[in-house]
Length: 126
Image (cartoon, rainbow, N blue to C red; front, side, top):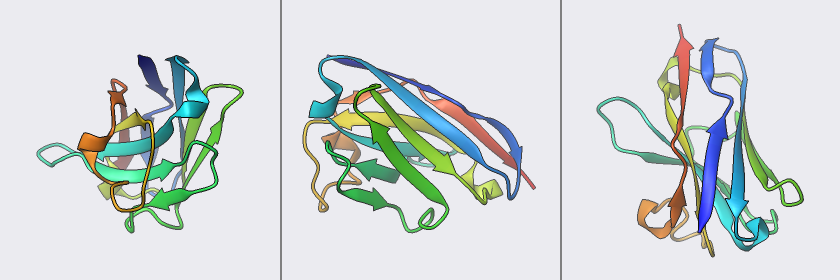
């Protein structure tokens, strides 16, 4: 069992930055690939970014590529999503998620992730 707790959300103006953090507890963090997803009101949850267990492989949705950066610290049991140049369309609840293995073919598949956090709200004003 892995428990995930997100933090760092808030209200920011367009063009601003936020840093989301996801703290993991339970089984060995380094055994899990990690992902970030988001869900806007009235929309389906969508993939944002993911990172492999070692941190070597990183994946981004096209909509955030070049603006968001995912990283992890296995010693601190933490995965971070740095978000720059935020846009109003980035407004959503952001969730971190964990899975035992990751492949490029299924990186964006919600069903492949075993554990989810409760989410943190990000609101970008225009």
